[in-house]
Each structure stands twice: as structure tokens, then as C-alpha cells.
Amino acid sequence: MDRTTNRQFQNVVEAIDPLYHRLTEIGDNPSYSGDRILVSKFAYDFAAPARWDVIVFKYPIEPQTNYIKRLIGLPGETVRIFHGDIYIQKPGETGFSIARKPPAKQLTLNRLVYDTNYPCPILEKAGFPDRLEAHPAETRADWVKEENGAWTCQPSGKPTWLRYRHVLADNGRTFSYWALAEHNDPIDTEKARQECSQLITDFSAYNTDTVTRYRNHRTSSGLHWVGDLMLECTATVKSQQGILSLDLVEGGTHFRCDIDVATGKATIDTNKPSVTFDHEGAIEADTSVRGPGTYSLRFANTDDELRLWVNDSLVKFNALATYRPNQPVSPKWSPEDPGDLLPVGIGTDSVQMTLDRVRVLRDVYYIADGRQYRHGREASTLMDYEVAGHPGWNAPPDDQIMETLTNPETWAKTDIFNKRREAIFTLEEGQYFPLGDNSAESQDGRLFPVGQQFVPEHMLIGKALFVYWPHSKNTPVPFFPNFSRMKFIQ
Image (cartoon, rainbow, N blue to C red; front, side, top):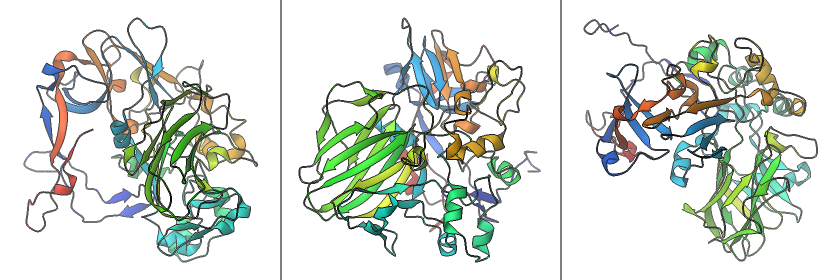
């Protein structure tokens, strides 16, 4: 308690590792105030607010309080949140269309899931399974992990993949393997791989009250499967010819980009004829991936669209790789095809290469919740799940959801994924619908009072443009600017 202002503060004493989900004591490390942001109050005098803008506005219920959120719904539209994505019905239209993020917004809204540049020595030493593994198993000898964490492939002539498995030392389903690792006790690698594998979820490490809930009940964060993924890798190609493949799986569908390293031609396709691309015919592009060299590759499946970047430049295909999936989309697994259990892959059958860095990211997941759907639930619990036809909140309990997320043999049998609701918000003229990027903890338009789930136009303050004063690290002198965190806001 500050005796001067009578304001109550909470000390931050623990943090959660965003990659390995481990609670870490941070003790007396300093806490900092938020970033200072430059806001243009005149931006919307010259152009109308655009979807995906970051806006600053007066909170309609307490106009003395300013909020900063991302603009999702525009005047006259109906907004549908479904399976983490945004769908829009514009005035005069009869159906909804998915709202696709522009490339720059997509990169901003991605959340890091895994990065080979940040290994966990404690788990590695104890024998906990690596998240990257050769697939199929008979090609395991084709891949060698170097001491610096890079992976080298010497293909034997058969198709071989290095695939990502989301395996956590404490996933809320079994006992924590952290205890074994911290006491230098050996871990049964294969047993841990079977017990600790799970779907990628909307887990976020920076939620303000997550630590307390996470300590008391490990399953209280990250209960929604996220199928929109992105793969980033730095590949050093050593061959003159061959095919380098990037693969993302969603709902059992493999979305694949094959790059011919002899010609640089990239081709996008899928293994499911039931998934219909909007463009009829081959989707192709020329890239700079030609022959030996080091290339930065990024392949994304977001908002029902596939995109490829080479050396940080967006590749322009002969047509947009937008598609229409089968609905509803739910995770798939079989002994023959692990599907969503190994949802990210880098493969080849003849290209010698070294992967110096691999990153897996997920799209932001907007939770389909709202005050009209809450039925008396506590404000801190935002969830998609609800059992239709039952009074009150009758969603599956956390442990049942986690059991499903971590048990691929149940994915074809469970109705958990069909219990994800949609949330609908209708706007009139002069009304805007905001959502927070931190969807699981955001006090945004979903939780405004029913009938007031919008921002009136006259309460818009402006457009957030630039982080001009991030917190200072006070080195080499007090209040020295933290230039590395200054940035334009996307």
C-alpha cells in the first residue's frame, strides 16, 4: 500500500516461462511502469478507422479511463468470433466471411511457442524428449542434432521430416517432470514423450493473475486448441537440387509448400481434396531459394490463408492461397499419420541442409465469450466451451479438457471440440467493436454490459502509432532511453 496515495500494489515475485511453462522466482528484480505511447488524435480526421488498427478510446462505462485495444468491428457490421478467428458480415450481406489479417498485422499478433535458440539445459540433461524429432522413425539416422542446437540432414533417399511435437514437462495431466529434472534424476524419454505430448493451445505467459491460478491449478490457462500456426527456420542448403518442404497441419489436413532448390519454384498444395482453394489450378511462385546458400524461411497458415516469406520478403504467388476448410475443424490423429500431434514439419528426400534455427509460432486466439454468455461465471474465466441446451454455465471441467488435449486417441471420439461456441456482436452506425490481443484476460467489447458492447464514435481518442518511451533499464545512467524497445505499433 502506498501511504501517500492509498493505492494498493502487488509485487511481482514469480514469472512463467513462455516456452517451457515453468514457474520462475524473480525475487527482488525491479518492476517497471508501462510503455509510453504516441497517439495520433487527428488520424481519423483524414481517414476512417480500419480493421486491425490499434485504437485508444474512452471506456464507455467509465469515460475518465482510457483503453487501448485492437479494432475488430466497424459500423454496421456483425462480428462473429468462432474457433479463435474473426468473421464479418457487412451491411447488406447474408453470410459471414473470415477477416484475414494483413501480413504485417499477422506477424505482430503471432505468439511464440518454441525457439531452438532458447533450449532448456535442465530438461535436456535429464533426458526429457526434444520437441523436434525425425519422422518417420526409420529415417532418424538422417538427422543429427549438433552441439550448438542446429540440426543437420544427410538424406538417405527416402522422404524424411524433422517435425515439432508440443511436449511439456508439466501439462496438468500427469505429475511434473520438473521435479525429476531439478533433482538430477533420469527421465524415461519415451514414457515422457507419450505422457506429455499435447495440442498447441492459447497459453499466454504474461497474464497478470496467471501465476496464482497456474500454481493452484495447472490447467487454468491455455484450454483452447490453436490450429493456425507459423514455421520459421534458417536453412543452410548444401545441395544443387532437390525439394525442400515446409508443412503445417490443421485438423488433420497437411498444408505444404515445396521449394525446388534447383529452380527456386515454390508450390503450395494440400493432401485433402475436400479442402477447396479459391484459386483453381496450381499455386506457384518463383523464389530466391536456388542452390547452396543460407535462407530464412517462414511459412504460415492463418485465417484460412497460406503465406510464404523468404529472407523476410513476402513471396507473391500467381494467386492468393486462400481456402475453404471443412467445418467444423477438429484435431486428427492416427497411427499412420500423427496429424495435429506433429503439426509442424521441415522435410526433404534429397537436400542436404542444416537448420540453424527453428521457431514455431501460433496465431492469436480470440475466445468466443461475452457477458451475455457468462451465466454468472467469474470475470477472470473466459472460455469457448459451453453445452447447448443446459441452463447456466455447463462447460466441460478443466481437467476433462486437458485430458482431451493430451490424448490423441480421444480426438476422433470426443465432442469437446464441437462444444466451442460462437459469439455474435451486432453494431449500428457510429459503433466500433474492440478486442484485446491478450484475449484470455482482456476487458474488451465482449465484456462491456449487454447492449453497450461497442465504442461510440465520439469516444474514439485516436490511433496508437509509436512506443516512444519504453521502461528504462537505468543503464549506463538513470533514465537512459531503452532504444531497442522503441517501435511503431502494428
